[in-house]
Length: 265
Image (cartoon, rainbow, N blue to C red; front, side, top):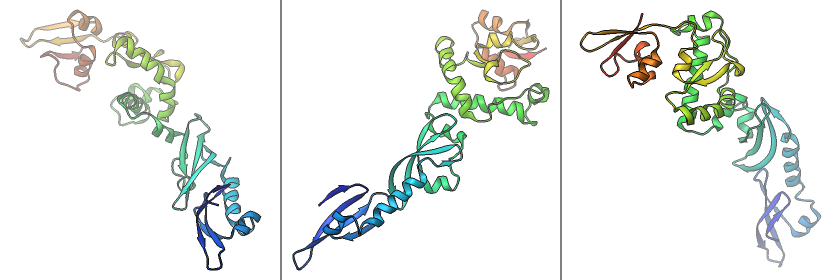
């Protein structure tokens, strides 16, 4: 009689003195074990508790919703904790969950789906871009808040997972053509919000030419010579310099670049 039967598994058979024997059976759902006689097993009488507990768990949890998750499939049990497959009702991603965790409210929100994203440099950079975008729009202590949130610029990307889903493919396409350093987040309408229809990936030159006003810069050479430039990207291109590094100087992230200092006028 060894083997699997519906939701129970026969673990072993044991002989008794009169020549008969009994079985040790285990419920696949809750892990409980019980002694049963072969005759009882055939009639499915004394193992009703096994069958009943399994049906109870399945009927109660399959299709039940916890936050943004809906339980779709039973997987198994370990240490009296049941594992299920669940689907996010917002983005349709699937993941495995422990029933005790989600009943406590752990990992039941759509935003938790970002935990399923690849752990690589692309995800890390996109998260960094998203985080800075949200901070500019919502954090009054951000140095650039007056140019964004202070002007009424908003974003509907409160959750990183939504930003990732909308912008990932276009990001990859832009990087393949222009490279990572020349891939920046740009609003098509500089007075508009950070929303999908108003966002694109652009080079530094494209973004600079799309600002509210072009800024003239001053270049200070090591010998004290000063040069004025009205187009940063053109200056960088003519002198074979990295545009993003020039902006790092202008924004005070670094003091100089190739012994040159850059200042807005």
